[in-house]
Length: 331
Ligand code: CDT
Image: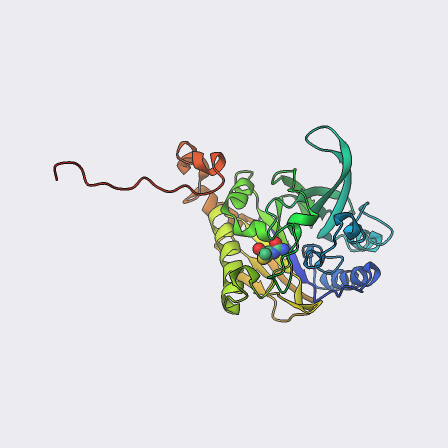
């Protein structure tokens, strides 16, 4: 019997700086209602879905940014999402900024700030948490940039690795699910760590500006979307999994986010794509048995991987220069 789950990418249009959580949560509850009417069993919301993408705003004291963070999940403000999940029997994925009072690596308990996502089951339980590992951007105000990208200022590097859980979702007893957040999708190492845990479905939220400030302000728009899709499609193909990749889109606080949310199958094909810069639900029926072909043939990891040749992947961070070829003496 085939294992089919109907999934939805619930893209959000812009959330302006002044928009309260009550409003963004109400928009998401409406998307959950629409999803339920279309038979969707799992809805994926974007990265930092409750507020504007606040890392574009500079606060001298990073603690001043605390109003963008959640101290509890669920909270009074986010409870309607969990209530809707229970009412409709629909799971969801949510990205948000988290403050956790936790011990750091020195054993000191202190407030720690992460760019986090959770997977919530159809009965409203938090099934899995992930904290973003690849934090792009910079930590200090950069006067050369028209728009800041201060993720390195506001967040610590995630400390949960890339976990996968076999989760009850939809009518299925278990789906192997993992998460990534935005910039993670560009790193094949992240996909492979999920692939090595037999992931079948990756939930991924993103906020990607249409302009690359690091390219001196210009990189062709179509390449920004192309590279996002290329990364997700390659990740799915090479790890024989589905992905639901959901964007925030449109002009938020004067800065453009490119949207183009997609659902991708294990062949790396896009099976649904958003076409607006607004709140938009795209859906697909995902037959998880389609993961079997890749993982039993060309990407049968147990047969074909050669970790003894991959040492540099974990031993090294930056690239080194290769040995220079020299003509052998006497030739
Ligand atoms: N949110 C996020 O990770 N966005 C990045 C853009 C970084 S530009 C400094 C991305 O990779 O899409």
